[in-house]
Amino acid sequence: MIPSTGRAHEHPQPAVRTALSPQAIPSQASLVQAALTQAAAALWSATLSLMVAFMHNTAPAHRYLIARRIANNFATLRQQECFAPECRATFGRLFERWTRKAERLSPHAATPRTSGVLPAGWFRH
Image 1: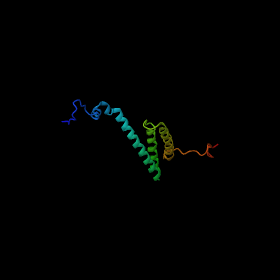
Image 2 (image 1 turned 120 degrees about the vertical axis):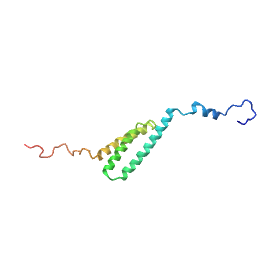
Image 3 (image 1 turned 90 degrees about the vertical axis):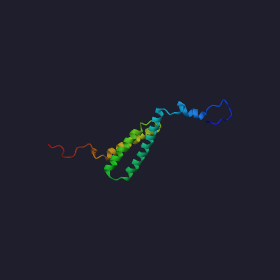
Image 4 (image 1 turned 30 degrees about the horizontal axis):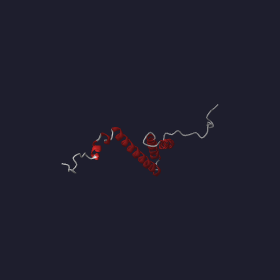
């Protein structure tokens, strides 16, 4: 039983009414958005950790794989609407930079030509 304050027209506390109202219950969409925001922040944190690992690792094959993962993470981060447009643009530039770095480290990278001239003796008469 609720103790009475002596007033006959007493109403339930507004906090109780608000807590039980439909407006106080988060919508499914807002819960999903909050989870996506938290996941994006975790991905950003993990990407920073991968960048540190890249700098500490000297094995070319490992550096290649880490650079690819970093580039892929930036590709995902640049699409997340929870970040400001300027931040997403920065993620896009970082995606491009890390993609180039991964391509340079790739064991399957084509060896670039040093000039457009064919080597001597290429054609025989």
